[in-house]
Image (tube, rainbow, N blue to C red; front, side):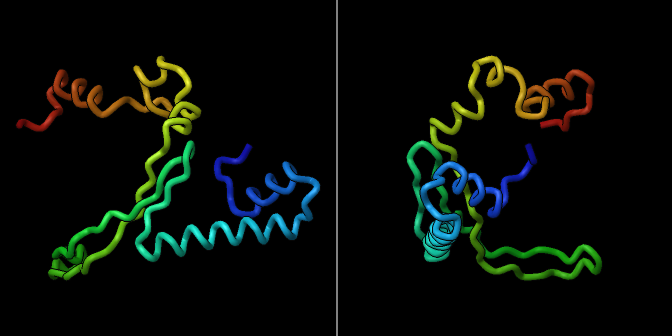
Length: 128
């Protein structure tokens, strides 16, 4: 199974799950759904899909940054960041057992607190 589910693979799965509906109609419905979600987010609306999760925009204030090449100050205006919060059912599907929650995250990565504790023990942690 590929690591990424793209638009065409999603449409193919939907068409396979609903053989009574012509593939062109499945594709049109999927495109309409994705366009509606994008338009809602672009207009500032929050999207909540029960059992799946919610999408919202987090507004980031304007800030002053630096050009890494020249060191010159650059003003960055207000912008929005897309945020996804998985629903309870989605979290249960992704992390089905308590053992996974208790120990390590996906791909065997240590939790941040465990890494910090390890760094404290070895003297690599920043003071404070």
